[in-house]
Amino acid sequence: MDLIKKSINTKVIEKCQISKETLKERFSCLFNNEKLSDIHLFVGKDKHYRIPAHKLVLAASSDVFEEIFFGSSATNSKEIEFPDVEPQAFLAFLEFIYSEEAKIDYETVMSVISVANKYNVPALKKYCVNFVKQNLDCDHAVLLLKQARFCDEPQLAAVCLDFIDKNATIILASDDFIEIDLDILITILERDTLQINESKLYQAVLRWTEAECKRKHLPSTPENQRFVLYRAFTLIRFPLMAIEEFGVGPVQSGLLTDREVRQLILYFTVNPKPSVEFSDVPRVGECVNEVPSVRWIPARNGQVPPNAVQGGYDQGRPLYVARAFHDDIAFIPGKLLPEYGLTYIAWRGSEHSKDEYEVLCGCNFSWVPASGGRVPEGALPGGHTEYGEPLFIGRVAFPDRCLTIGRIHRSRGLLYISFGGRETGFPDYEVLVVQ
Image (cartoon, rainbow, N blue to C red):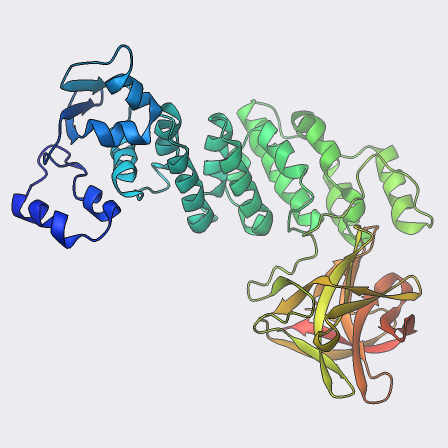
């Protein structure tokens, strides 16, 4: 980027005062331009970059520059050196000061934030965070998270973590994930909002342990894998797995002790559930379907988002597939009746109405007959119990002139629907299957 040899057309600059309608447009014309400049900034270690600037514009945007130019020890020099600033980031900083916009990308955003902090321009920092929010992708989320943590930028780190939550299946399977340090791994595992099956999360953690053992020059044995995980191991929520997943994955990997395996098998097979050393608090996003076309859209008070999936009817009125939290723990599939402004779910013998819910949108699906708690391949998890058991979406023709949506509870062998204030179970039903 040539900051020195920028061509200047003075006729165009003169016309800016007439042709540009706003103050922002007129000041943008002065950016990196000799026109009316009264200071030159030399940027970089070798003073290679010489940038014309305007004291008033700089001082009006930054109290640091105000002190430099107009403070008690103001400089009289017409040239100021900035040897410790990355030139491209500094140019983006100046562009924002003059125009409230800046050319930034994944390579420069952290450097620009650093300059914004150095010269106390919080609006630019906010601009950078918004850039990341709008442009972040799976290829850069982990890298930016590491940089944000290293530079102590909690706002940016929070944006990255939120993106990782929503794209956990892809990101945790990437090579970037196995390069993170233990502190970041712990931060990710602590999150209740990861949208990934716990068994897949465990497989990603195993890949990380193998890479970490290699970095520490240790054989990749179960003992060393657990050693490098340290307390991160206790953050894996084994109780959220299906017993089949637990047997094929964690038990076979050998990281759990015999006592821990016995405790967890008891947890899976008996009621009431015994206490275990690992959290059984469901991750809010765990049962979100991983098919890209499927979306759960938050809504309230009868709102129906575009492309909502209609799954039934109530005496001619459409019912949509929805789900809602109950007691802030269980996440229950049910039916949205827009006319009443509520989603209805069945739980523990009763019908519960919810004015805040999520609606299933934008997927190709079919309804497949099943019974006895069974669900076919491709069945869409729509929520979970307070113990982490997945709940699937089903429907049944009940009562007359109604096709009612509810939850399939596999361990109980029934589809449960809400109707007339009560929860009613059915052994035969249809299951929503994503195509």
